[in-house]
Structures are given as structure tokens and as C-alpha cells.
Amino acid sequence: MKDVTLGEPMGLRGGVAQPGMEMQAPASPATDETTVAALPETANPEELYGNSYEFILSGDYATAEAGFRRHVEQFPADPRTADARYWLGETYYHEGDDAQAIVAFKAVYQQYPRHPKAAAALLKIGYAYQRLGDAANARFYLQALVQDHPDSEPAALARKRLESLR
Image 1 (cartoon, rainbow, N blue to C red):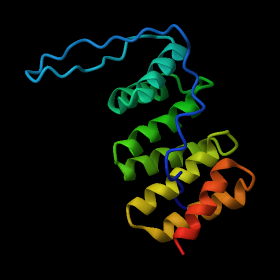
Image 2 (cartoon, helix red, strand yellow; image 1 turned 180 degrees about the vertical axis):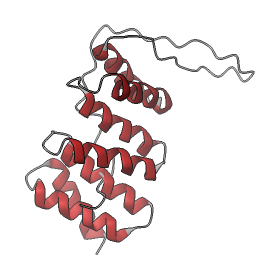
Image 3 (tube, rainbow, N blue to C red; image 1 turned 60 degrees about the vertical axis):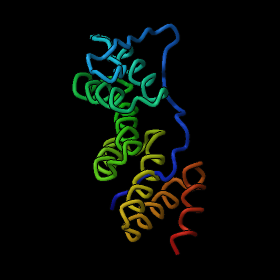
Image 4 (tube, helix red, strand yellow; image 1 turned 120 degrees about the horizontal axis):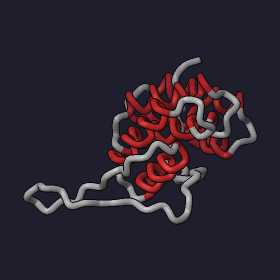
């Protein structure tokens, strides 16, 4: 199968952020008074995922990326790892790194083809290819999404996008 990604962000739904999680945002030593968020150290996969998800919700994609990457590397057997891989792809996508987003979303689809995020990963692959100017791959992945997950919300979005790619 070729590369498939979800087009426009469908919103940051599907996260498992836990209430009551505290995040720290210490001031950066930079002279421009920029505040840089810090991902709290933890050996708890649920806490790491929750903290990372909070950063993506706040638009701090760099910190979220670091957290989701750490989750994938440190906790490969955790039940949230497929979601962490998906959100890692979202951080790349929102940062405009479409090539890296494609790689991340492909990993979700290839490693977890029946996961609830699989259809969304295909959508984002298609969107990222379109942003890269590769209409053929964009069409391929969007069509694969419609074929493999016809009743999903991402498939409805893919159908709309395919019309614009004709």
C-alpha cells in the first residue's frame, strides 16, 4: 500500500488526557523572555501519554513530539502506543514536516491496521502527500481509506478531498 494521511486536522479527538495532571512551564534562559514548556520526567506510560497529549492540545507540538516519541520508545507494549504513534504523526503534520508525518502515519497503519486511528492515519497520509504536491500518492491513500474504512468519518473527508483532486 502507498502512503496515506489524513487531510485537514479532524480536531484533537481521541486522546486519553487524564484530569489533574500537572505540567510545568519554566522560563527559558533566552533573552527574548520566551517561555519553553518542559515535559515532566516520569516512568509511568499513562502519565507520559497524558502530559504529551496536553501539550498537543495547547499547540506546543515540539514538546508533544518529544513526549510521544519517548512514549513509543520506552513503552512499546503499552496499550496507548498506537495512539502515541498517531499523535507523533500529528505533531510533524502541524509543524509542516510532511515527509516525517507520512512516515509516522504509515507506521500507525502498518503496525495497527485495525486500530481506531488507522483510518485517520490514512487520511493524514493523503493530506500530507497533497501538501507535498504529490497528487497521485494523495489519491492512492485517500482511495485506500475509502475502500478499507468506507463508513468512517475520515472516509467521508477523503471523499470530499478526492473530488478536489480530480
